[in-house]
Amino acid sequence: MKRWANKDGSASVFLLCLMAAVIPVFLMLYEHASYRTLEHAVEWNGENAGRAVLSYYLPQLSEAYDIYGVWNDETILRSRMERYIEANSPFWNGEEGTGLLKARLEELEIDGSEYSLMDTEQWKKQIRTVMELGTYIELLERTELFETLKEVTSLMGEGLDGKEAAGRSQVQRSGQGTVSEEAETEEDSLKEKMEQLLRDKERREEMGQKTVESIGLIEGRVLDDFDMIEALPSRQIDTAYRQKPWDVFRLNLGQMGTVIQDSLYTDLYAVRYFGNFRDQRDGWFACELEYILHGKLSDETNFKRTKQDLFLMRTALNLAAIYRDETMTQMIGAMALAMAPVPYPAAFGIIAASLSAAEAGNDVKALLQGESVPVLKQPDQWTLAELATDESAASAEEEGELWTMSYEDHLHVLLLLHSQETKLIRMMDLVQLNASKDLGKEFSLKECSAGFRWKIRAQLETSTGQHRMYEGEGVSSFE
Image 1 (cartoon, rainbow, N blue to C red):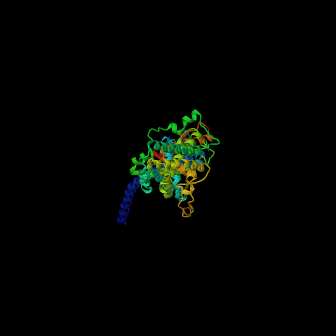
Image 2: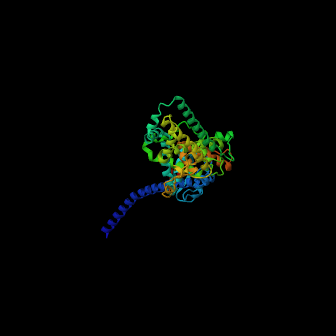
Image 3: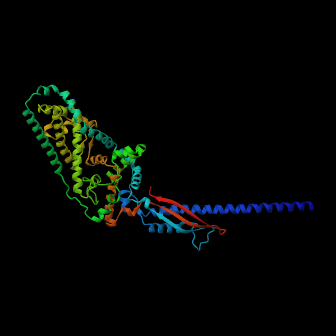
């Protein structure tokens, strides 16, 4: 019995020694786990508090434009975060708290300067989010338009740059010998025919311009408040760095896909969320897309310049239609031959350009009246009496070959000719002006942000009374 008693005592001593070694390790692991729990609680609480603060977004921006922003007032943002943190954390107990684990807020820093809504990068991100949510539906609805836009850019190039080549090819088709046989016509006859040709050109172009000018704005608006003008993003943002559209593509070859996608999204967003002459909305300006194109503080000025842009576009497209249609080239070729001894290429080019300009006036008038105009007109669709023909385009219509474009579609093409930065800044102007109708004329996008950085300093306390300071930081934004 004595021998066994000695063994029991040895085992007890061994177990006591083992427990003496294990307990400190256990306490150390417990302290570490407690701190990690509190640290995660601080970070989790900060993220949730940040998201809660973002719920105070301005409805004047979100409901009309799907753009989200909060007041960029650090005092307000800090106060809201503090209230949420103290009310919603299971460990965030006050001085009278009874929890085993405690965390006490010591300091909260807020910085929203990096996410100002008067920053084009923030607009790019939000527009990308908006368009990606509905981009597939949008693309399906406008597939034909996108195909038309590609065709239009190609055809405009043909219309503006291909006159000389087309004239030469027409000389060969129509018989250059006819002109060469009359090469010895007297100089006064040449002068007379050239003067007549130029008179006809001036008459047709003037006719086209008058047709365009015949439609004006019933009620245009003007921004003349100096303080509001100076507060516009287009006046506040440094525009010296703006790149032309082709420079953007040239300088961003490594990110070509993103650049093209962002540019496409910007144009789609502009067409969807802003009005125009044909679709006037309750905004500060009656012609919003026209403002994005030209940026003048008068509806009348923006509208006039847009009409001139449309006139030039339609002139180029009508020229392309002439050069691509055999019937048209033969008709104008006969008119050019009748002007001998004027050189055929010169006569053909002048007549084609002047007829295209005269017809462009009718095209723009039709667009302003809400009609759609074919991208390339068939012979029977020209309204000029000089080009009257019995040719029918019915078969082409049945086959779906006649692409037509509305006034809005033409504006979409014009948007392609402007840099993304320019369009974004002018859209920001419109949003600020329109929101100021509800928020007061002193409202500025500079006072709003699409997010903020936060940093929390908290004192952590475990159940054993141990203390430690911890810093957690993060970003809360609408991205």
